[in-house]
Image (tube, rainbow over the protein chains, first blue to last red):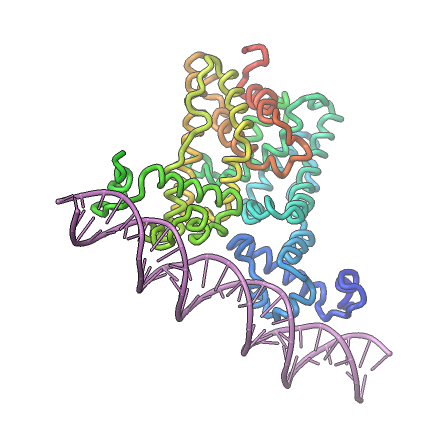
Length: 206
Length: 206
DNA sequence: CCCAATCGAGACGCAAACGTATCGATACGC
DNA sequence: GCGTATCGATACGTTTGCGTCTCGATTGGG
């Protein structure tokens, strides 16, 4: 395997011995530490220890913790909602809710972890937005656009704007309402009870 | 002024010289530091320095940082939504949205700050819930109950459950969507576009 | 097939915060 | 008033993470 494929592009002329799979291993450790203990607890020494990697090696590739975390976020994009297309807007949104409920905690914890940090580090906020938020929002927007084209919802329905923030926001506070609706089906229920009525789609319209 | 009123209840027989106003001053500094830099950056030395208070004094009253922060959260309750009663559910919800938009950032930053920390400290999560979340939720529930009693909304409308989490969740993600709707009127627009339609209340019903 | 550069590992000095202990000065309770 | 406990302030040793540096071992390029 051409081991400096990913590295050459990043470090320029330097010939690093870190292969792409090793790179993802490092990023994975960063994201795991993020989820487990939060941004402030992500430590170069912690990453080095967990990945059996020398600290100097980390500093050779990334100059600061902020860069390392940003890079880890940027390279680990896997969208929840992308690819959903059931043929109807209601079906799409329900499928999205199910997908979010399934991976619950995984991405939510990531957002919790950088929640405070991104208020102070604009580059971190940008990375989070471009990596985690924007792809999901784009996928939801695509669903809505298809729904508009199919005539399922009016193009000027003001609720359209709030579908994505509402859904992600609900994900963001579920931990605080776990006594109320910590259940698996909270998100699909939200789609049926709030989003679809606001969009003017009845429960019968598949 | 009876200076150990608040203290006697906390420390038992010890006679502390910290008066109630001084106590609130300390708590205020804790909350300010929380909002400015996040939970992990709240430091006993930082609090001591900002309040011109000896570290030993802090340790005399609170054994750990977690206790100090929890106490600060618990004693600083001031609900946004409590007291709103315009006579109609739509009016109440719009007033609540305006109130939240006005104090925007203040409580949101507090939630961001403890967002990651409360995943690991159950007592901290409990304090946040009882202090910041529950009063607001109770006030919203009271609005909804009055709306049900007035016949403005059906008692079994499933959207009722999602009014409070939806509103607080939107507050929680606004920073991530600031390119979309960072405006002041985002929350009132959400009420009109999503919540009221989902509750079956038309725009004309005051 | 050899040289050079990177690897993992860890020692090093520095800085920050912890939690404790000590110190006059102050203000409360009796 | 007087004694005493708490006050604010600060010194102290410890711990933790930073970022740099050195060390054999390894490995890829020419």
